[in-house]
Structures are given as structure tokens and as C-alpha cells.
Length: 526
Ligand code: NAD
Ligand code: MLT
Image 1 (cartoon, rainbow, N blue to C red):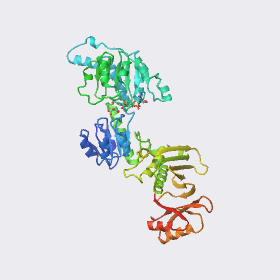
Image 2 (cartoon, helix red, strand yellow):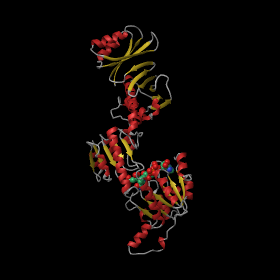
Image 3 (cartoon, helix red, strand yellow):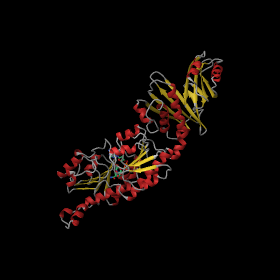
Image 4 (tube, rainbow, N blue to C red):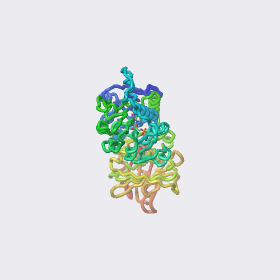
């Protein structure tokens, strides 16, 4: 296996990756998009920071790619939808550079309040102080924090330590977190009206693009100063420039830009603006931490399938992964069996969980069921990362139902597949920890093993039919390993599920189908 490191990153990354025996690590941190595409052709893993743009074209051309690791927090340089569609796991390392980003925000805040960059330039140019270097105290000033996530909260702690009055805006904060943070929360409009300094700590998404534009800037005090140490694009740069030129904003400290590097951006010629080249996470400590963390996560994913800090899947630590393994195995086979029995267009799948299985996250089990179903139809690879996404894009509605107990089974997974004019129900259960069984098909109950060659016969419930099935299979030298039967009522209809040691040729299936009283015969391989 091969992993490509495409952005400059601490040496610790390579060192940690090489702990996985047999893994080849290639480091090419200054290459064109075309060269990157060539290099990626035989790589299972890719590691980037924010410089490399992992575009749809790149993802679609990388046929062996299984995982993209972002050594850092922001994932706006990766086309997540394209990766998910292809079943490529995207993971990041949130939290490892939080302190560095918060400290850099505060460096910018103090540097802006005391005109440090200009003062340094003046002294090094042989000058001394003048009136333009008169600064402002931050003690007692109102610090408005937009986004009280990991970094925003650390900035709040530092603001309070400096005697600032901290206020915040974050519509997605849970009540529990809001209480913990101890920052008065308010609307963005109120925050902008009250703040002396506004600092942004939200992700860049289509919804937060130009969160601060002309309208928002007009709400602010004329003495307001902005800090953006999150992502370029959160502030409309043209609107900011206009407001500074018009004297409606006193200053701005920018670590990030809509386009990086910003080149000769007119904002950078303004004395009210100070800027750094996306340095928020650039400390030795943060870089070592993100490098080691992403390498460890990738090693565990490639070795065991563990998903830590996933962006496009549910996180599963190695221990949980191990416990879920038998349930996912069973669910995948239920989906797979269904795919081999039905040929109509599926409209909805309802997955019902009962009993002990509810002690585990159910979404990975549903994903396994859909993987088993979809991979029988799709040519593109289907895996645990893209199964839910692909199902949704095929217009299949998904519903999970959770019920605590079942009178007969310690745990039970039931998948009901809805078509335009009928439904099919398949249930599976685990006996003990590791003995999966198919226990129900529509209204018939069984004890069948969901593995290997399977024959399902539906017939009238009358004497002699099973004997005839045995005779036909015996004559064809096909051994029956297990036979389980269910019926609706005496003399009604019956279904037999047979586990066989050999595959049933089409000719034998036709012979079975011709048995008097036989309704239908299906073969499946699990
Ligand atoms: P986080 O996910 O922990 O926090 C983001 C917060 O923003 C969340 O609490 C969320 O509820 C809130 N939010 C989302 N939309 C919002 C909106 N419209 N209004 C108000 N709040 C909103 O993220 P984090 O780790 O704190 O990172 C914050 C930002 O900093 C990200 O953009 C990240 O990419 C960036 N970052 C930059 C650097 C750098 O080098 N400059 C370093 C690290 C992180
Ligand atoms: C991040 O989102 O983590 C930052 O942009 C830091 C970086 O990788 O440069």
C-alpha cells in the first residue's frame, strides 16, 4: 500500500506511517495538479493540509484511493461529496491545532490594538514613534465571538483573562455547551452592534460565505475591528475594504483570504489592516500533533478499518468496530440475499432493531445492509462510507425503527424492502456473539445460515415435495449441509432454505421448479 503526502507537514507524519509494515510513503509537496493526479494513481491514501485542492477530477481519477487525511481542521479544500460518492473516507484532526489557532487570534488582537506590525517596521526603518502608533487598551472592551466551537471557546477564555467583556453568537451550540461556555449568546446583529472587536471562528460553508458583508458592517460601531483567523470568504473582502475606506471600520487583522496567497490585494495597502500568511496552526507543537494524529488514524484505517475523526462517515473506534463486526456481517448478508431474490425497483427500506443490538450505533449496521444490497447492482465500488449516500442518491428512502425488546430473540435486525406494489421482510439474529442466522423471510420463520450456496424453494405444504428436492439434488451430487423450513399453516404454503456444499446449476433449478406443487425456486450465493 502507498500513501502520498502532498503538503509540507512535520516529519513525524512519515515516521508514524512507516510503523505500518509494508506501507510505502511518498512525499511530494511542491507539484502541479497534473503531476499529483499521476502520482495518486497507485495510492490508497492521501494526506494534505490546506494548500492542495482535492478536487472532483483528482478524486475521480484516483482509482485506488481509500482515504484522504486532512492534517488540520478545515476541510473546505476537499470535495467531500465526490469522495463520499466514490466511497473514499475523509478524516481530519480537529482539536490538535485549537490552542495554536486561539493563540494566533489573540496575537493578532493585541498586535492590531497596539499597531505592532507598523511600529516594528518604523523602528527597523530607522524611525521612532509618532502619533499614528497610539494604541487602544483591550481591557473592558467588548469581544464578540462568532462561532463558539473549539477555537472560539479558547479565545473566550483568553479574552476574559484580559478583562474583556465577552459576548457570542452561535445558533448551533447545545444548551449544555452554552451553559459551560459562560458567554452571553445573542443574534449576530446584536453582537455586531455591541462589539469593539469581532472575531470569526466558524467553518466556511455555502451558508457562512460572506457572513460579514456590507449590511452586517453597517451595523457595527465605527471603532470596530475585525479578526479573521478562520477562513477567507467569511468576510466579503470588497465590502470590508469599502467600509475601511469610508471610516466605518477601524481595522482588520486577517490570517486567511478568499484566494491564498492574496498577492497585491488592495486591503493589504491599508494602514488599518494587518495580515499573516495563514499561520494559525503554524507552531511546532500543532504541526507535530496534527502530523502524528493523522498518520495514526490512517494506519488504523488501512490496517483495521477503524474510522477516527471521519468527516463523511460515523466514527468507529477499533473496539466498537470489533463489537459491531458480527452485526454488520449479518446485515450485509441480509441486504445481499434480498438483492438476489428481488428484481423490482426498491423504493424504501425500513430497518428495525430490537433487543441487544440497540446497545450499538445502528447507522453502521444500516450502511452494511445497504452495502450488501447495492453492490449486487452497481459497477462502482460500494463500501461502508458511501452506501447510505448512494442509496439516497438512488432515491431509496431509509427509515430506522428502534424497539427495545423481542419476546423470542435477544437481538433482531429486520429489513423491510418496499416496492411499488409489495413488501419483502427479512430478519436476522445473532445466536451468542458470533452465530448469525436468517430467522424470517416474509411471514415464514427459519433457522438458516446466511453463508455460502443457498437454495430457497417455495411450495404447497404437502407430503413428498422435500423428498423430491432431496432426490434431485442427490442425483446431481449436490450435498445439503443444512435445511430449515417454515410454513404459514398446515396445508398452506411452505418455504425451505437449504445451505448447500455446491452451486446449483441452472438446469437443476429448472428441474426443481418443475416439481409438482413447487411455486418458485431461487438460488443465492452469500
Ligand atoms: P468547530 O467546528 O469546533 O467550531 C465551529 C463553530 O461554529 C461551531 O460551534 C458551530 O456551531 C459554529 N457555527 C457554524 N455556523 C455558524 C454560523 N453561521 N454562525 C455562528 N456560528 C456558527 O471549529 P474550530 O476547530 O473551532 O475551527 C473554527 C474555524 O477555524 C474553522 O473555519 C477552521 O477551518 C479554522 N481554522 C483556521 C486555522 C488557521 O490556520 N487560521 C487553524 C485551525 C482552524
Ligand atoms: C486548519 O483548518 O486546520 C488550518 O487551516 C490549519 C492548516 O492546516 O494550515
